[in-house]
Amino acid sequence: MATKVDTPDDWILVEQIRAGHHGAFRDLVRRYERQVAHLIYLSLGRPEDVEDLSQEVFLRVYHALPRLEPQRSLFSWIYRIASNVVIDEARRRKFRSMLSLDFLAAETGKDARGSTDDDPAVRTERSELHGTLQAAIRRLAPDQRVALLLREYEDLSYEEIAEVLQTSVPAVKSRLFRARQDLRSILGPMMESRT
Amino acid sequence: MNHPRPEDLSAYVDRTLPVSQVRSIADHVAACGPCREMVQGWESLRAAIRSVPVVEPEPWFAERMEAMVAGEEADVERWAGPERVAGRAVFGLAVIVLGLLLAMSFRQEATAPPVDRMFALGSGDSTTLLASSELTRENLLQATIVGE
Image 1 (cartoon, chains in turn red, orange):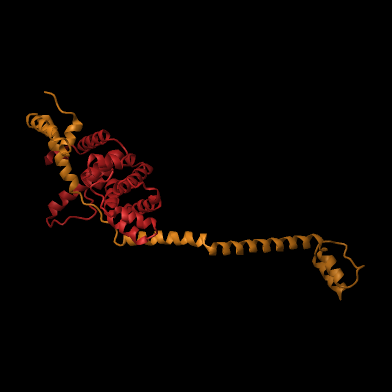
Image 2: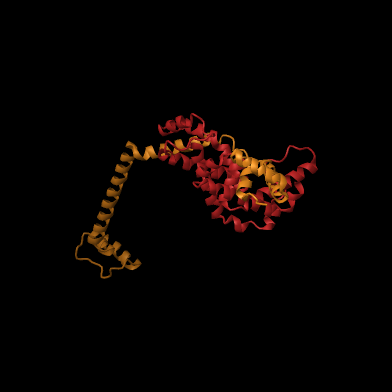
């Protein structure tokens, strides 16, 4: 299934890579590195994970590229590999059991890039919100988390998310609903005070 | 009041429902406090999630990946090309030579006389053999004297 996020020359790049042009692989990495980095960072929450896991994702992409079927969306396929890497990593660390309320509190105030607001009070408040949200997102089940990030950050349609996660559209709807409900219950009072 | 399914309310927030369904859910949300609260809560959550900053990829990451796969392939080619055949031949030859040397040394060990006998034989007098097969200070000295 071709998706709106695939660019027309994605498959030209794929053919060039298959023919041994490493520069084409560099271009492919440039095209998707941002999305992959977002997914890794938002799912696992540690900036230091981004480079290593991005590297793992793109090496898997490179080695699996000869087996990629022509009718598949390259973007969905790369995102699927990235999702698998993230889910494997999260399971490996038993992330959910590691995340306690103490960890949630410790995360509060952390911000990977900082804020551009000059007002320290605004900056602190935003930073707290972001830290708490990120920690809450990481407490979601991996499949819910990835579905939510694909929807909220990448603006993928349900069909595209279903393709990435190799599931059905009703399953995607259900995961998104559960992810939102779980997030609301985790965040609870904080979100209510903002509505 | 029949509430919409929660999944449909979530899809309504995502604006992925068919137009006909959007209208009926919008009417319901306008009239139903709990559903409106749920929708507003999710919309607020969405705005908050989208405001979370993310890390940027490392600069030159793509170039490093390019170098990495190029290096991997160069390694594969090096070990699959003519150099590999030559390398294997040299390695094989080295193993054979080493094996031969080891075999020869074992053979020599098996046939060589004891050290004390060698000293005695070295004197040119084949009848002068040391009684002891141990190489002690005394019989070494004796062997040296006999040799003289």
